[in-house]
Length: 357
Image (cartoon, rainbow, N blue to C red):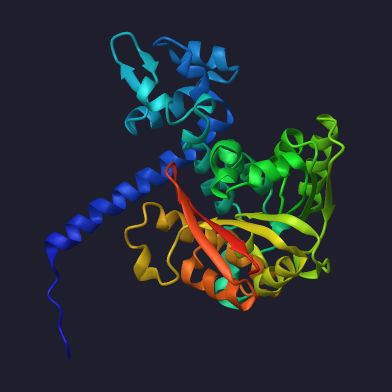
């Protein structure tokens, strides 16, 4: 019989870490609420204020605001003066928690935790029975994803993302046909359609809700050079049609990513380019030990990306499929030339510039 001597120092250190995890999880929930109710945005514009003043300014119930402030103060997010009983959001914190800071707003990502928590029972059921949880079970997923991509990809589209491909901006100005596979709510495509009126843009997405939102936004902007369709990317049958095809954080969610990549290869013109933005990661978990948000990405993958694919009988690649697996699948799809680039401000994503020849 083997006996193990307990390293009490290691155990105590782990106990402290787990308490920090519990507190951080709680703060994440409160951060999501602070973002959705615009409490951070409100406090950023106020001098040190009482809970009543903050609630009045935000148009919210004071009792709930006061309890939220308790979590934010003890979580070292909001500062409190016990003499005047006033609360203040430091400018240094507001610079990472408010809508005005665009891509630096970390509060947007806090929304994923309560969103994923809403399907915990279904996920646990899958642990026992296999299968997956379909898109329809995620009540706010498209709204959160649109906000996420609006910050990370869309905000950087013209200044950083498109310039990764030499000559692309000029081609878009002259006029080419562009396809976005897995377009979601269409923020990126509508923005490009508005900026490049000589080009034509098509968006495909599996979700009818997302496509409806994308078409509504195109109509609101009075755009005549963009259209969105409900389309399973695994059934695309176009050939040599597009000068540019894009996928933004979409391939790893597909039920049949291998088929989708082959379809993209076939739909791309011989001199066209495929721009694939996907999660920066290694395929083997050992390569992600120093990744700054690996636990978050594996969690999102387990409770959304992987399970949604499995729900439709798919491969279940998951968000952390990694560079090595991506390169292998691109080669299997027939692509001959792949270059991977990163943006200085974006540690979360890799940008694959892919050509047929």
